Length: 275
Ligand SMILES: [Fe+2]
Image 1 (cartoon, protein in one colour):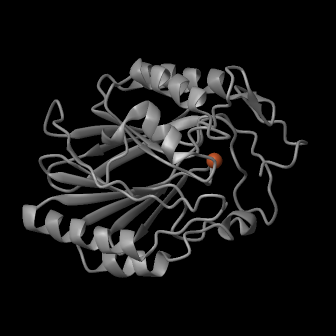
Image 2 (tube, rainbow, N blue to C red):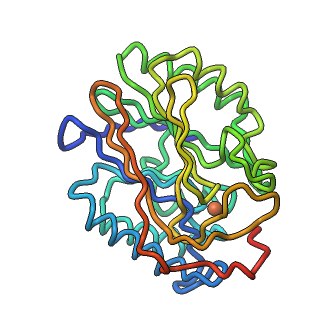
């Protein structure tokens, strides 16, 4: 987790966010993942956002932004994101290199927290360098606790973002990689009723659940999709997409997922070995 706290001044009363996740850009433009050109699919999803969302206050990019941690991938990502919105908050995933991300985007793009008039967005780093699975660690959980207390003092609602899933999603192969200390995370979240949502990437599928009044949200990747309810890895045959989130001043989260038209950027389901 970074130590930087940044301010976000939305254009209106509602904070209008777009989550673009698991972009998996390769070192060179045109690189593919399971047969999908990840630059081309990202650019198509960005065009879709532009056609559907008249204003975006900030992009939330929740990890696996590159496929192998190449600085060149982050440079192309930033260029593509800039065409939609210059305000961007990036999180590392298991495929990322945090130092390379910082070198391209700078510390303000990898903050610990984003403060808006009625909302605090807390960005947790669940990456364990060299590992596929996720963990937050005691130091970061202590920082989370003080950020939650500060948000309560300030009367702000809270959205928590991270890369790995903090709850089982129903795919055995993915759930082995779940945040290892998720119980401690929820112990903190459960004592703060200002927490309204938890948002993650990693699972390349749409999930919308509710837990003790908190929205639990996962979202499509901008490239390859994973089929739900699988024991072993399986790609899905639905197109890429993104999630939008409108954070209202009364604490409501309005959100939805949108995808490219059927048949676009479909992964080769016969190819295995995503990991
Ligand atoms: Fe991913």
